[in-house]
Length: 225
Image (cartoon, rainbow, N blue to C red; front, side, top):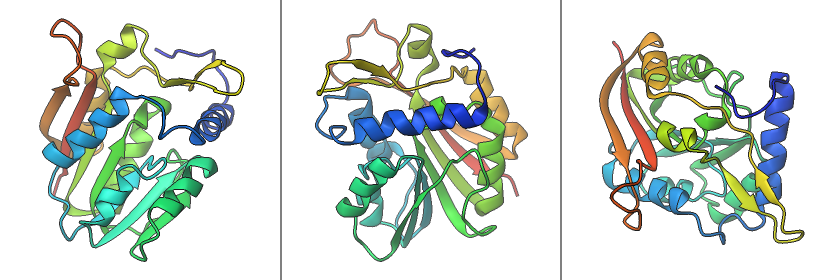
């Protein structure tokens, strides 16, 4: 179920791009437990990235790209927001890292079967049809390649959580256009796309109370032979 009125796919992506461009100037300075937990989980509970060729979806300002660059053989980072990418390029000037402004619901600028691991962080809540993403994951991954996705937990979405920020210039609260996906939709789309689910994770930040729903959902997938 969507949290916005119907519009064209192009209008939806343009709205997401605009919202993140507007956020980019203060994104790293804003308090954001979900963003910080995502970075922590990738580093401590994600698959091994040492020496891998990694494709990063939704790299933003490079919060995870910087860590990937220090461990991976090759990093290809995609994001729809030029404002976010400008900061990411400044943050991670390494030669083995390439950044691309790209809508991940369209074919990715990556050759077939050249990637060991696809990492996606807080990006699929902005994608209407998950099948397009899993189809591209299957195309670019080598046999036995892996996917690690970290997303705002569906239970949080049902309670009204959504990527948002306060614009410091005018005090306006900006909601980034989002789509609600259920756990079954994530899992079934992955399986139908040719992946085996190795592990599902549900995570809270240390500051969250015991009676709050999980903040993040993670999926660790392996491309079927």
